[in-house]
Image (cartoon, rainbow, N blue to C red):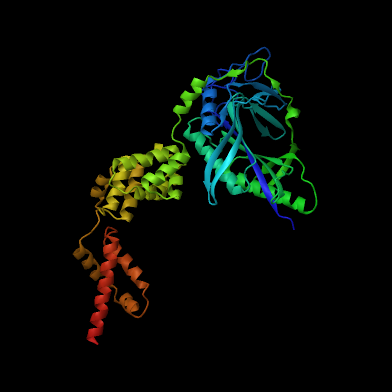
Length: 488
């Protein structure tokens, strides 16, 4: 039975967060909730006699991404007409780049469970987005609000050989776009769209098999599921001696299958030729240098710094740097209270705090919990002013009200009980009130000690130092046992 290896490359389309469209002055609006066709003009709807003008801000954003991906920047790039007709592209062609793109020959490094990976980037180029079709029963409507929005296309080489590679590459690239502040990269709104080219070949072979292009991948989960299905489908065809057809397929989320859409076009099918209404794009090397010098610290470098400077685990560092506002929040919290362990701050942030943010659907930069209040809370737990249980209660209240952790602890009487004698009194009280459970413990049911621990914590209103409660409970039970033995 032959063994096959998947070969996968991604094409990524990301709408750029400019104020106006790629070749006209129409404002960019949220196409998911704006009034249909409310941001259109003669240029983005392809009226005869109109002339496009290149959006300089879009070029700047594209250069940021290309530089962050270690690409070679072309001093001269050329826009081209990509000829095909869709109902949401009324002029019958898309202005894109082909033979002379903005940037080429880059790479993106990232970490997977199997180690470090480098995926080569074939090209980065600019184009315009299409409109949007809204299908109804028996007819379709067209919304041109999205038509002409600046679109960045990033094409990888076919360097990925597993769905894990694809998922980590895609999430890393999305994180990069957000770090550079060039795109919201919101998959749910279609701001970033992934298309995968996948083929199979015999393991050990360097030849490429016949590929299919998988579309309609609007989430990372859908992308993984679609690739798993397509790899299995192609494998079955090859195992039976058949041939895979080169075609474009769509992912049907409901049925969990890929479905043929059309035969796969080649470049010559689009009849590319230079856009006659736009001059070649000339890039000043000094402008490129200025943009390169203004790039922020990127996720990979930040992750490595968090590990070396703050002694975080690679896993914790990766969680913190995935979103730039989270990484900034973490560093602001650490800077506010240098005496508190960065590891403890990271643990609380990626644990309890992430849980609250996810449940409420709130981004961290819109939360009422300031980095300073968060650092103070973690410090109080670390100093044992309050225990972890009370810390969670305080965090929940700060999350709702934005109050001060110190004031909340004082107002609610949550200060931790650290007095050994007070805790021993509570332990003796619980043991005296539960003689049956104590007998069960001495009869060999040692797990009952955990129940007794819970009763002590309840008697203390959850404020007792857990370590002292356990130590005192263990000692009290030991004393009772010795007393029983000496009385025999």
